[in-house]
Image (cartoon, rainbow, N blue to C red):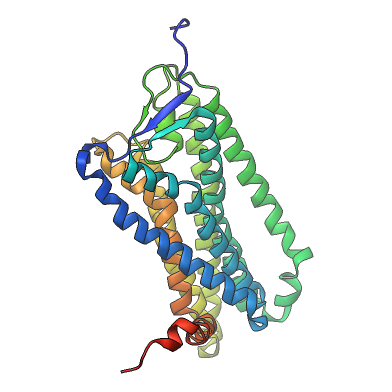
Length: 315
């Protein structure tokens, strides 16, 4: 095996069993891509342009929109081209670079939900000290440790993947360079890669989920004990909980599908691994736009002021 050279170029072959029908996938994924770009761009524009939305809660929502806007850009254009024109090749360096940015930016979907949970905790449980605790200099102590955690974990994961020798196959059964999809092609032991991958799932996704759950248990307990006057404050919390439930459920299924060998079809694993960074990017801005009253009102106002909307004849 020492004389076998390691592959430096790979073929991304997700959904290969569809054969000639593979180009049909361009349509639903392209529609989702346009929805993601449009909805997140509109949400970002509304929060940035409206001074009344320049409060910590809406800034965090804008941060989530920024993550949801940028994440698909790292893999969807290449994936769409592969569906349409069969452009499936990618270099090892390009693969590792794509892997790093997808996984690094993706971690902030759960990290931002942690910060949102903290925002709601301070707003509902300690309202008198809300602005003091959400001031940037005070809130940095909650931001910096999680950012450092994300950087370290993803850097270790990608570095370990890059140190492997890939001499078994050069075909990645995925639509982008997902960590375990690449690691599976290594010709040596990958036990450390799987272990570090599981540790990262626990330290990021599971840890974030536990913290968020604990925060909302405290929040709901506080509201129930304080009477009906605080019930209205739960509306934004429920919006966050809906986003959390969808985002973390899809992400955990995607990660675990590569580590639990139970005869799960490859196409199913590829589907969930593609959805965990992509589906929340389409889903989150719509949920925040519909359920957050202030944002919904400004979005409707922005759309009604749009020249295209004004030229549409009313029935």
